[in-house]
Image 1 (cartoon, rainbow, N blue to C red):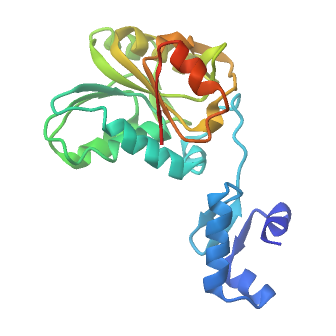
Image 2 (image 1 turned 90 degrees about the vertical axis):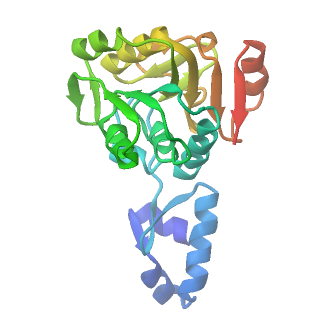
Length: 247
């Protein structure tokens, strides 16, 4: 019934559902939690909303991307942090999953972090102890990232970083891709300058292809994703020499 209601309207409230069904608000909240765990809706403050469908060819705003698979992104971010060591030089690509990495660096005292994301740079400032470099360039409203010739020029001065790459679309045959050409060009340079390339993305990104190609699958050293990864994909990736971490 809840899912049928969400087909007719974008959002429902616990109070309204309780009133209409005669079921307690406590039980309604439990039902919404179960439906969210099955990826059928998104919980909101006081209710739930229809789960939006992510289009790999759409340049989706970061504020909307945060609603997609956020629990998986949280776990992926925590797993990625395990690959960071004290004093590391790391590069955080823009994206909602890489932002989860930035949120979980409390145990470190000394890190050198390069990013093209204004959102990530702002998050990192809360630690008040890391060396942070934000690339300059043209600001993209949708992704809160910087791109363009200036960003590419600055990036050429940095190398041997451990890159955590956000991914919009991935397939074994076509590799990593994104809807935006300027993002793709910057990501290509990041990979070229990196010492290690770790792609972080949830399983909904698999077997999809976007407009602009970034890299072939074998250019990645490691992929961190969730347990809903398509059947057979792990063996394909491992056969290509790619480390796979599942959360």
